[in-house]
Length: 300
Image 1 (tube, one colour):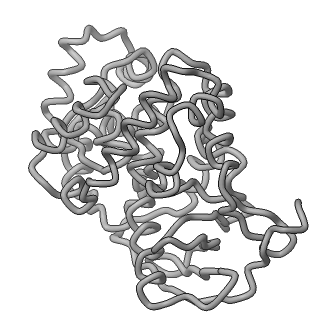
Image 2 (image 1 turned 180 degrees about the vertical axis):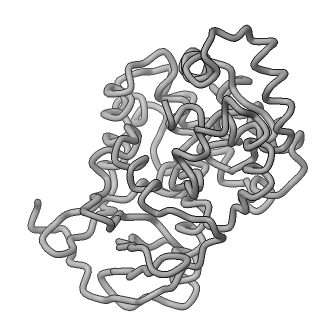
């Protein structure tokens, strides 16, 4: 810990309802092993503490289960405005998918005898997304043909370029930078930080383009238009676009076919499935096929 890191001295309580069924313990178990956010948060018992950027401010949020949702205390170096509190609450609600109504997904899954045990195992788990879709896009670029440990180191280097850190109860927490901060870095500086010229170019071009994006459109706009927007970003191909649609935006209409999913599906269905067989099963989940794929990976 450095002496220059500010203390989080101001606190604002927030209540975050969740659509039942909701199991925060399942969310914590997922986050405990989520490589992209390793070292950026703490999970102690049934409590999550993490830093985030909201309304241009760095905030530390501490969350715990309460009733049908979560209690949250927002901690900052100075008083938070109503807009900053609302922005932080929205970011947390969206990351933890608190508004997802899983009943239709579960109804389809219960009729799939090989998948029903997966539902039993993860019942009440709402997908945990990246903290922001931009963070997901950055991770998609950094992790291409790269070991996850190396990508995580590169991501930390980007975060460490800024002073988005606070101390709470003696523990230091750092938030991932927002688009305006990252856009202040030149392509060369990004390449220097991540140790890769190609990634530096991709990151610089993507972040500059992101400044003109509308997250409300990305979350709720026509699926094909959002996918086309993502495909237009430097370094984002079809697989990465689907990855961000699911893990950064909660858009579940498609699934990215890759090795981990094939392995997880083989374990759940008791045999190796061809890609055509997997797609046929996924098609039966309609708008929920991304959730089907995510549940398979998490259960595995």
